[in-house]
Image 1 (cartoon, rainbow, N blue to C red):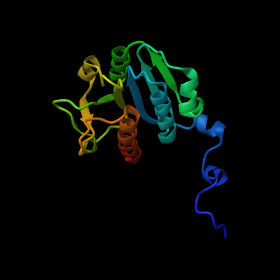
Image 2: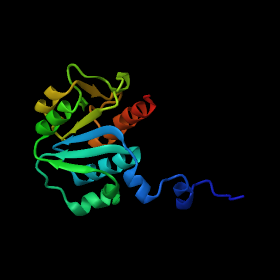
Image 3: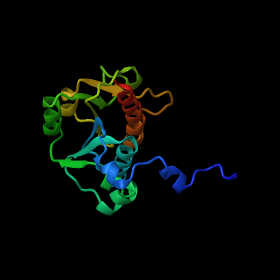
Image 4: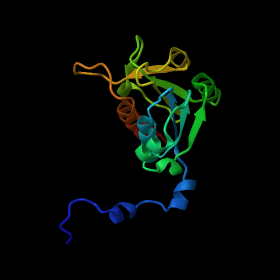
Length: 180
């Protein structure tokens, strides 16, 4: 019997599809829209999250000044497994998604925002996460069906955007996977 507790890379791969199978495997109908997120490491982290949860795509919106080298390092080259789109306009991207019947949830503490765990996420869902300093733009908030927030019990008022994204994405993806 193997005395190691931790799984090896070979152990982890046993139940995974092949690379060709994965590329054609359907993803869950969940899209992450990054509203003027400018930090390469945060964008790379979202690409890793998109791969981890096998979501449909990530749309990176706004003026892109990101370092490709930093993003690849942060995403650990998982961008080849994830559909990543780039858009100059968050509002234009959100309007297209609305027209396609997606429900849009912006992760932002607002007057009308609700705890992200109290929401029943539908299958065609979009999560909008905002700029590291400014949050989700007012224009994007106006296009959202609901603003959601992560309750903060300490002295801080916010989390890093990729940390907040991981928390909300896990809840949303798990709910969608359980839908009939």
